[in-house]
Image (tube, rainbow over all chains, first blue to last red; front, side):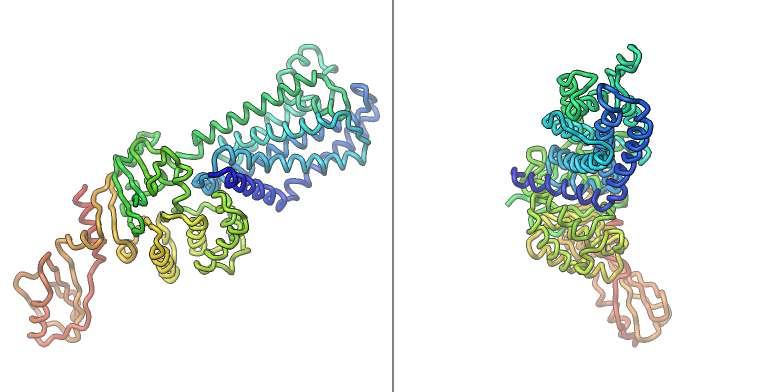
Length: 257
Length: 305
């Protein structure tokens, strides 16, 4: 395929993905707005007033970046795992597999769909957050690059999950039993300084700690971990996930016989 | 001109050790209408799966329009359109979108894809379903859409895996008409089917595959010519006289006005007509008792087992 033909194939996959989540916006976009509004109201406004400051900022300001990042992670992951597994389940993935579309275009097309949903949800959640607090962005470059890298990384993780999934239960296992606990334990609602030394050390192996703190640094200028370490971890996660997704597609694991 | 499909020593052993293909050779010329026949589990779908890249081969070579799939599968894939046996759609997609997306995967811009989608939807008689979701289509309409989807990138070779399974007679006839027309335009068609009448009606050449091996192949006409016997049914105007016999022929009276005749290779029906005419019986119609290709198919499979 020429570069132009590959570009068309990429746009086709991305357009299909975007149209899919827009068509079912009540399942894909609305829940994040409602859930995050409740988080802002309960943790930020009601409980937050009694907590006072954390990391040198009000508790409401402290939780907003983490909650935006949580919405991005869950939505990008859910978008790709749901869509790719759905295509596998009804065999419509064969439409792509029999075509000359290269594997990396398939991966990038699905990732682009996930990233676009992540960005859209982050805009929605940020807009909701502005009803509760004001946000003065500390470093736009960090904010944009962390959102981009996180969306790509978790879209890729969703794709990998979808390749291995055999049932709809398998699609939900990782988000429910791994992703959500790691997000909650990743410093969305608290600073790692509050943890005993041992648990603060254990938290260092949670990749979500770096994602949440990198974004919080971009928004507020405060972070529990060094920003370069966070970027290194995020880039590392993205590269490893991309390489593994490519390996799965090129070997045809669970896709070809 | 290279062959549309050239398969040599193709082997496939699945992970559980089952040998689906034991080294098959096949050559389908450009422009041919070719039937790949065989009982269930013979290896037809495995062969198509390998050609379409959904199944990886264990050995051998496949060339599509002269392009070796091991050297440039991407280019080889552009030459073929696949109509699978099972429906493989996203049921929530609209009919038109299914075709536009498929064209997009082949690098066809959306404007051209939309024109082609309409062209094939009209050709296959489902243009009025353009904006309907897939789940709303009948089985026959889905089958026709699968053909349109396989053609939207205008491949040189169209491969259909049991395309008329579960399709009513009227719709089947219109599909035959479309496939004939497509073939006459120069496109090679390879067909697997359980309807042997369909293969005899449409195809020029045939290969019969059984237990992972090609047991016979060649022109349908030549293979039928090699049939050792045929059975005809003669319907008569008058009631047949009891105990009618013609030396050298096996006759059975199956009904008062119907005679069954076994015709060995080289024999003709003239002595039968003479005998019946002599007995004052007029023959009003004559037909093969069974599909001739079916007889050949059974003979070949029995010979192979």
